[in-house]
Length: 230
Image 1 (cartoon, helix red, strand yellow):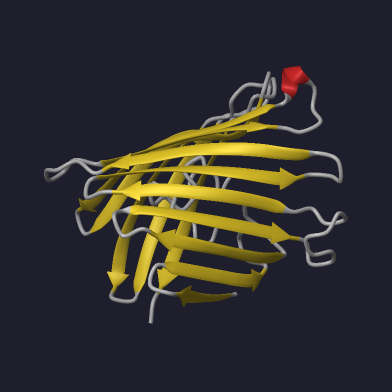
Image 2: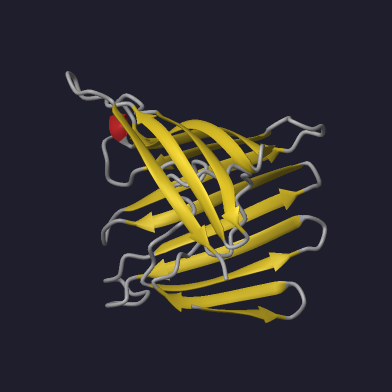
């Protein structure tokens, strides 16, 4: 991908295998490493997994930003045969809080498309020891589905502490892309991120995920993320 400025306030991106939402601002302060909750419930509106991608973002200079992204398949680029996705994002960021809204259209076939709207916000309270609060909610309409099962929802709430001993910590819960008429499969997680040295950070996480299938145990697990910087 290649990202470049266009004037003082506009940034443009073009690339292959790059997310269409690469320039979006999602109002979320939660920093957990799990794949399910790290997008703060902006699951489908913030389009990802593009073949060919273009996008642009504009910074108004007052904390307000706006962005657009589009992505398509590499075999048929933005044609009737390709499955394309388009999204808009707007965000406002202040000293202690931020809000954003993202709207996405995702083609699923030559005749149908899904639409999603994601709302996100975070708050950074003043005072030592108080956690930041992040919340997200996404609602979507599944194109071509029956009226009783054409709605998808995602939800997330997370708390983050910047200073816990030598590192930082967080806890969160949420569910992702839950189809109308089915039970939410919530995931609950907690992580602690701490620096080993100047160039390495370790982040262990423990989680538990509901399973809505009858007579099937919930999932529990542990993961460890290691980050290097040079």
